[in-house]
Image (tube, rainbow, N blue to C red; front, side, top):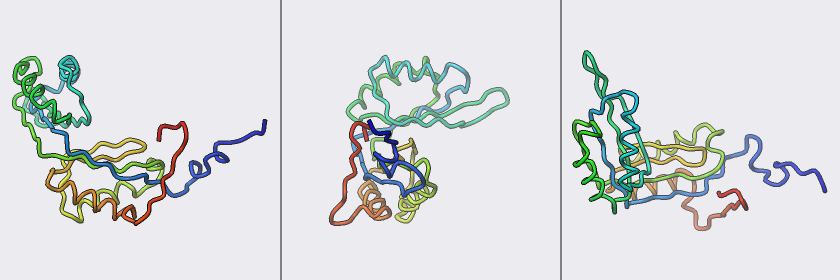
Length: 190
């Protein structure tokens, strides 16, 4: 058997070659809840996510931010996105478990959409994230939440701006051509 390296099988997955942007995905079927004023202390986040899991709520994106500090305590806000089809379940859960979740107020937003840029090589190529957000900024689209991984950059934007966001990101990455070449890596899940 010949000695074959990964660079021989998948030559574009080695070295500093241009990243392969597979496409832009979007989802208009999500909602977001923000729990505000949660005590910033060990165990509070666990209680929140254990409770959502036990209620059968599917969480997509999460953002936690330090929200306020008084003379004795620090507080955080936690925002999550979930399928809008679970909205009633989420509202019932957070209302009936307010004391257990330890939040002061909750905001629910059903007017959101998620846009994702998908592709390999994003982690090792600077400028991809900047170009993604520049495309949104050029259209005056406000970003409500951000999530990244090695193969995806996602942003939650106002639902009314989702279609414009998709078009602008397509254009920024040259994906709005008449024909698009698909790259498939067998067995890698990409």
